[in-house]
Image (cartoon, rainbow, N blue to C red; front, side, top):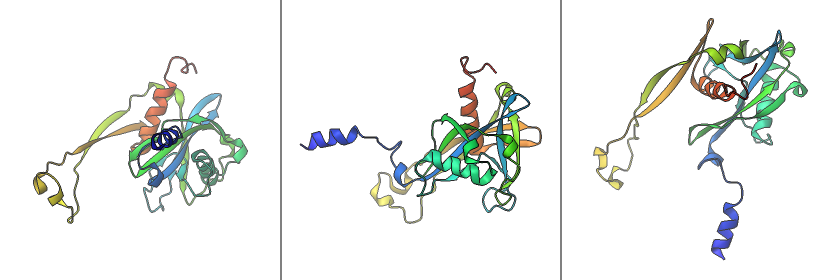
Length: 211
């Protein structure tokens, strides 16, 4: 009986990863806009008055609220709130792989087209400015990478007496790859660059890359 119930439960949809249910969950939108007959990716420059990451370049998005029925609804809502575009003008094309920054932080990216003519009254409290990059440019650009080494630092009350080797335990540093895209006067890096790199690799497949 126990095994039958367990088997039935395992056939239900499982979390994307252990800890997803309690993680900080955010959703972002990669907006595609048509400019002079060519597709571009639109980016935001975060307001310089923002408490976190002022002036950084990002995609529209934010935390998934309890009232959002899904990550996609959150991405659409945030895009509407930040860029001021009509909800009806946001046409979602699909979802990309989630970015799991850590067991406590996950980002769900979506790709959508929007009407860039509507982006005239964006939220100045959150967005300093917007700009676009042609997809053709992104397909031909080689981003560059730098590595950051992160060393675990246990808290002062860490129970060393519970583990083998105690306070002599050899913690392994973790290397983080940071990718950079330089476009005109803008530099895209961090989470935005990681998601952008995956998006470019996705559209660079021969069956898609015919623009």
